[in-house]
Length: 188
Image (tube, rainbow, N blue to C red; front, side, top):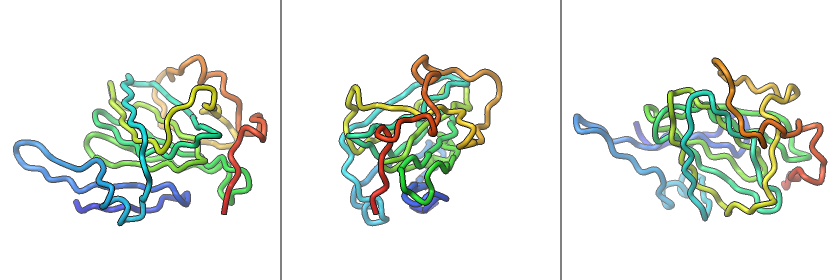
């Protein structure tokens, strides 16, 4: 597989398929190379890396920061997730629309979720380790969320069994309930 970055159904949300070199010993791949990614259209300065370990049925999200927006480059180092980006930028032509992609240790795909989008994922494997780079640091008090099951967004989560949520995520408002001043504004 050769290195490839492609647009998804939402402008700015990118699916990355890194080049994987495998043989009988295992595999090698670059999870990020600034020159290669920038040359293919993903020119971002990443400031923070995160590692999340979760069990089957965990749903994290839909999260975003308002004043310190974070673009995220996400991949599953182990296991499999269904990764989702939702456009929550007021004034955007795709406001309230979502895209979802299976990211796994098997396919090695990555999803870039740009600033101004809410992000979340659902764990499909027994456990998973999700690693993601962020274009800004986490700022306590600037983190917000949209309800994962918002009926106006209609995300088609591949749910099987119970959904395990944090208390905070279970109380997130819907997109329509969110106060307009707590949503990002689309900038052309």
